[in-house]
Length: 373
Image (cartoon, rainbow, N blue to C red; front, side, top):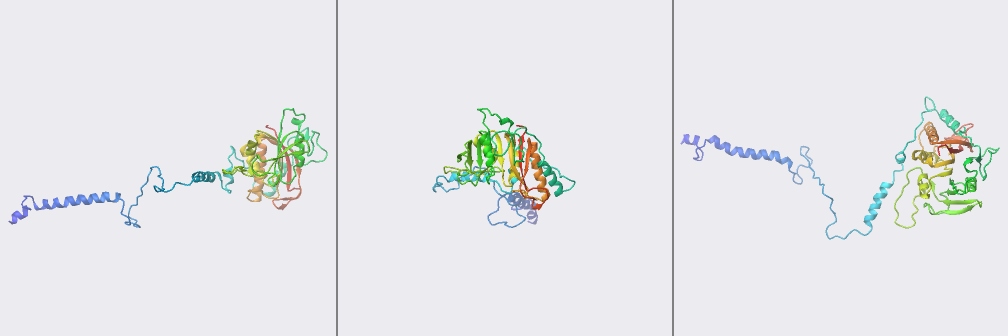
């Protein structure tokens, strides 16, 4: 019996050790499968939370998103989907006020000029700016001065500005010139009189004009000016960034009260502006930069503009030396775009960036002619 017990199990004739193995092997295989497959299965809710040794899995679905609205619930109210689409469109159209440089979408960028000396110097930077804006580069044999409606020789007294008039001495009957004026202090009265005398199509832009409904270029006041021409008045101003627009459902959409020069020209159907006057109250530096980078200056023939030096200007920052370097870079960009200085007139005041400087004025009115037109 002992021999049978040692060699037999359940009278099957198999060795006892082999019988034990038959019992242990299936259990071992089952355990091995659980060890391999187990981690691939998601844990039950509440298990393994916070255990750093556990694996975490998430399910990613690439199926189209289904309507989360429960079946049978009321439909979205009329117009809500359109409003949501407009809201998203408006969010994309609006741009961050602090990201000025990213808003410049022109085909070129303003080239920052090298320092005037080996190291940043207020005196060196200012001297080259004053030299640049007080030395005319182009001489016009026949000019128009403020208030004049007929071409003449340069006046004896230094005028505030001059326009090269050789192309408009005897304008043909079918020749139409276009003139823009941007001013809020009434200082453009003589300019309006002069260009109206040339029978130009004249547009005056002033955001403070209470007689004109704002924003939309179609809402303009047309008035006779000195019985010589017609002046279209718009309650609008120049912008140096891409304008912010939002669709309006209501009629009479007036749009933005500020537009870039290129957008204004496009809205009015003008491919060329022959005479442009601008006194932008220290916004001129960024506006000039926009004209350079957008290459709008290729469509402008003559410019009369006042530059202000008493403070850095709108959205212009940095040390005094950096501001002066930026100003000179803008002036160089105007010249590179084809503008040649015809005349320079000093304004009142004697401070530059809030510093009193001898023999330097706080503003200068500059007259340019585009030699690449």
